[in-house]
Length: 287
Image (cartoon, rainbow, N blue to C red; front, top):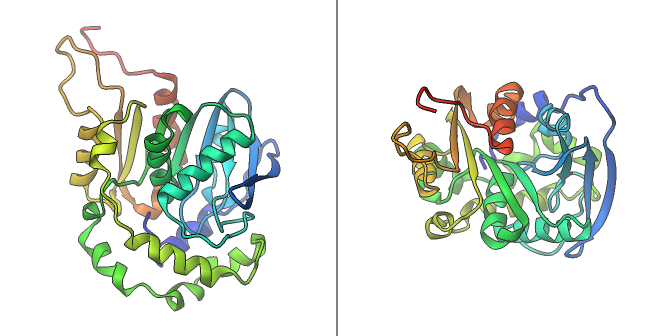
């Protein structure tokens, strides 16, 4: 959920078009919005949720890669991409409720979910608020408590201003897709406020029943300690090979990877996500 100047480079890199079958785009009425989404691939359903200031194209190659083995429903969230903004704050519970309403609107009773950054936090809240909707959740670059952010990022949040973002390259990219090309400053205001929203979900995360794959870069916006604490809340971290089943949730740390570089690690992401969704685990010598 790191939404600063660093994300500009990631958006420019991952915004490249990729070869493959053309996804089918559509809009559906969701909580007062015309929510844009694209469907691609065949297989078990997988809902994909992008990060802040992003859209479907800026998620890069991971969507077409996942569509090789899944029927992917890629959503553009409130005020992002081709989905219009509405007179409502952007909060993680609101985004989660939007995803649940979207699933109802397209007759998707239950699905796996992959979210990155803001989308990963929305995915966590979806699993918390609408557990009947989520089979498994792959959450990249996420946290459950604002105290878990890196000290540099916590110090930076109070300094965020609209002016800081409107001159960035992705501000111009926003205009190319947006329902309201002049709406970027209002979106920035809401996303800055999102960074200041209270975030203390420990009890809710600990109560989750859906398996979660926690993915993080080793130089991500959340500290490694926080990421490990999240994994332990989900039941992970115990020793294997002792006659007990492994935890249903998993942890993956990407080496030499910052927050904005996580989404560009397509092959690594797929190598972690696909076995997790299939329920495949490496076999030990005692199995």
